[in-house]
Length: 153
Image (cartoon, rainbow, N blue to C red; front, side, top):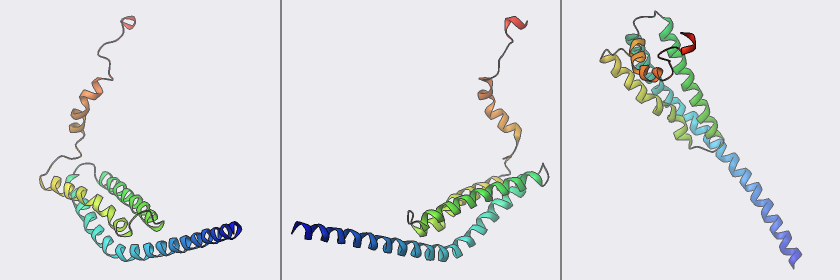
């Protein structure tokens, strides 16, 4: 009787493992389908967000020519791409809700796009190096010596 119970438990364990793998594969397949469906809409919104960011970069950065805005735009796109690939992989493995995974990079970049547009409309000097030097001057004073050592005088 104990032998029969032990065999029964072994059969239940193997059945549970096979069902778990089957459900896991179904979840992964469902996640991929939802990601592909939501990607169609979310990429459309991403274009609008990148328009907000790009137009703001073009109007804020007047000095420096084409180089600085292009570099900043490339960095922003790389950040978006890394976020997008990361959350999609998490969704495909079943660790994240696929609806959230499709929209999370947009939710993160949208406030940045609005902020950049606001800064462009108020004509702020966002990329003025002198402004940042003055802001970090108290911090840099901590690391700079005021006078030389007695030995060198």
